[in-house]
Structure formats: C-alpha cells, structure tokens
Amino acid sequence: MGMTKFQRRYVAIETVISMVINCAISWGMFMLLFGGRPQVPLRGLDGALIDFIPQTFMIALMSLLVPTFLTRRRVTRGRIGSIADSPLPLPANMFIRALLVAALATFFLGGIAAALLLATTEGTISFGALLIVKCVYGALVALIVTPIAVTAALTDRTPGPSKEAR
Image 1 (cartoon, rainbow, N blue to C red):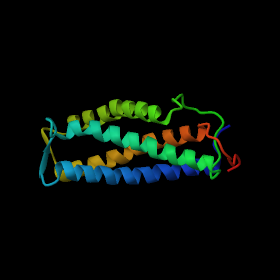
Image 2: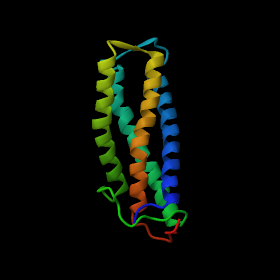
Image 3: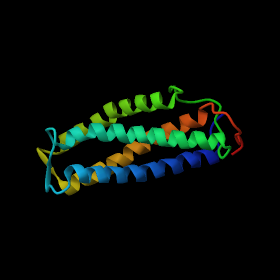
C-alpha cells in the first residue's frame, strides 16, 4: 500500500524543515571554518574541497537520525500511520541505516559536489560564492536524504497504535 496524502505531506514538511535547518548548520560551520577570508583555497587541509566530506556526512547523518527518531515516535503515538511495505531495502536499525546512507551520500554527493566545484573554479573561490554553494549544498543533501529517512521510518515496525487512514 502506498502513502496517503497526509503521509506524503508529512514527508514534504519534514524535508523542508530539514533543508532549512541544514542550510543554517552549513552556514554556521562555514563561518567557523572560513569566516574572515576574502578567498578560500580549493585544495589543501584548509580548502573548500575537503570540507565536503565532513559536511556531507554530518548533514546526511542528522537528516536521517533526527527525522527517523521523530517519525518513529509519532507513529508509536498514533499521530501518523505507518506504511506496510518499505520501497527501500535499508537496515531496520536506525543507527546502522543512518551510517550507511550517510557514507553513501558522502561518497556520491560529496564527490559530485567537489568535482563540480573543481571543474568550475580555479585555485580559490570567493568567500561569498562559497558561502552560497555550501548553504545550497547543505539544503540539497537534506532534500535527497530526508525523504529516504522519513519514508523508511514510516515502515519501521514500532509498537503502539497507528492511524492507518491518516
């Protein structure tokens, strides 16, 4: 059985919330790491490229753990109905699931983002341009990962009442 309109709306709302939060977190971490520099080098240990690894991993991890925990709690309390079958072959354990998806996201999304930045920028990038890139990228990672997390959490077998019709 597929998702109801209410469940699809729930996934969309959780995704937008995650995008906003992760954009803000990306902004804050960017300011801590690169604030005060007019230009940021692409390469090196203090470069923009290497920062895609921890940014992607942490954004993906939090975009999985927090919505999964909240959704499981809402299903258990009967605030949203569960889905019978998962369209995604993911581990049932929330932490293993989060680590697996975060690692895959880091490899694929982080790799693609770093390659695109490398292909379109030479040597350094301006502070302002990189700030925009990092904030948009944080939101994009959340846009991709959060629906996976919420959909999987709706299929988790948690005890308690559920409102299947919702």
